[in-house]
Length: 206
Image 1 (tube, rainbow, N blue to C red):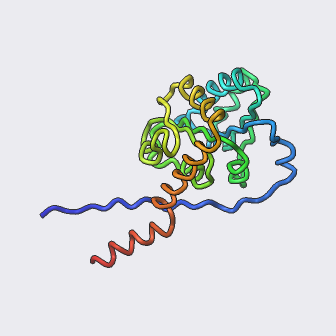
Image 2: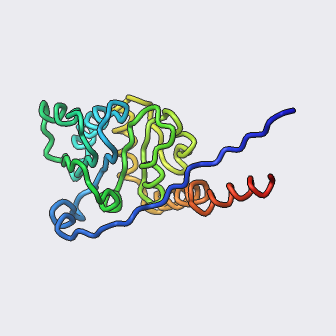
């Protein structure tokens, strides 16, 4: 007798966003494009790849501000940026209001490898913010390259930088179409409502 298995994804929803006019005034300007790294600083999150990509991006796209939001418990980031300063880079550190940073940025970069489910990727897509992630782990299940976001060759910071510049310069209507498709895709797949519906189907079959 064959056993049937059903895949049910964990539900993901956006948390509450606390408005902060002082932070917004201090860091954000309509003159800049804002890039975000969101996640705790651990080895597999590949913050080093993010920093190398940012160096290339800022050489080719001067009006860019880059934010790193996440807990650096082992001082990985601290040691990396100590060697090389970039005036376009802001190390925010831990934030109890991560969705504030997410909603105020124009592009999310997720160079992490071996992620089963990149929560920050789904949250970005739910927020209608473009996201570029490594073609590693479960990322290709979430992102359809060029349709709901972009994938870059893992650990290849040159590829990440090129794709970032491409997205930042992208035609607005074309970009909005991708963001809408991405939002629809993750809403259907990872919403609390869809999760409950899938669980109920299993129970009703018992």
